[in-house]
Amino acid sequence: MDDVEKRLKAIVADVFKVDQARLKGSTRFVEDLHAKSLTMVALVAAIEVEFGITTSSRETSQNKTIDQAVTYIKKKLKEKK
Image (cartoon, rainbow, N blue to C red; front, side):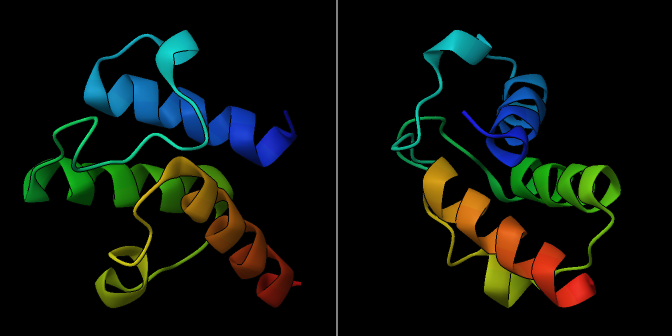
């Protein structure tokens, strides 16, 4: 597991109040974690703070799984350099 994935899983576990060991790359935010819009806002805010990136709700709503979010964060980090 790389650093971005590890950090993201820690954030997801905290925001959704789940055991981090339960999270997999294929874990879906809505279907598996029962994400609501307010929870997703909190998740996006925590990701922005943790990784020092800015996102749009349109872009982030396309990330349905943890793996997709990891790929998105890595892309944003590359753009930031």
